Length: 433
Image 1 (tube, one colour):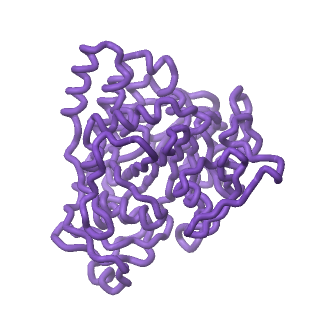
Image 2: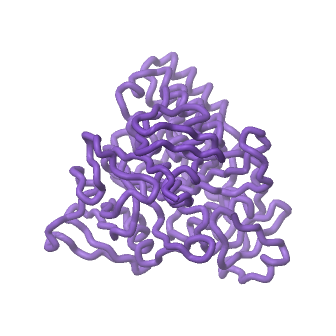
């Protein structure tokens, strides 16, 4: 992990072109983790429980369990205040998570609050597609001027690892950093805690994951056998946190391993067994709101319910998990500009994306899966690249991102971009060192 620069060092680095942001207190130490689905699960207290009296109680109980909210600001320091419940079109939500431990001895003492998980959810205006982008924690990016808890603002930094942004200026700084990197407006955000993952996995009765071989990671305490595993509680958390146990031992392997879990979680939440069970539905809502610190714009049951209503009918084959394009550079990674421009141009233009690459170094297609397997030749339209070149047309935006469309408006991503859909059943790959 990179060491945070001192105030003197940051003053010596270049300042951003925009003005300073308004005062914003740094987040207190938390021990957040993933998944972006958590902030949306809270909405089931409003839209997912069939009995009116239970729904009324659940709405009240979930609403009172919200943690104190965080103000987001734009590049000029203005507080972001989107309309409550206005989910008529496309929207973006950022979820940050930290490995700080928050004082919980079970997670060890790290002394820093770093956003080792940063994910962005983009839901299309027609509510038919959802794209979740994972940003590698060790990716070098510019960090803009961010709020200083003591007043005023920190100077901008031209090149720092993205996982320093949460410690540098709180959740607002992470949002500003991702906005600068992607060119997207992000009005909603949250920070999820370690314990939230445990409670969510417990609420659905565990998440089934496929493992291609035995995985043992003494750093997180993970020990799973090859084959199908139902993970919940501390084992689910250890599975999401493991880096040394999967792929090449890098954070990139951990991202694709997390996507194995998240895809299965989507399938579990969308299953009739979960949606028809008020106890599971309420448990998800309670777990989410009790363990996630939300931006003020999202700290409202009606807003979250509006998001859930927009997402509830999205086909799982149209839920795409993708790793932000990158390449190794020095002691971390750097954005792969052309590939990243293609991905971000698609999201800015509100176009769905088609994956053609593999699922990443930490996972592989499940050879026994009845649903789509290999990402390059799947059976679902959401990930299948067109085979007839005459059906493709280039697409561009003002930022210069280029790709191709397949006749349905979907942008075909280069094979160097890794990811999977929620419809693909994949397996985690043990560490190969």
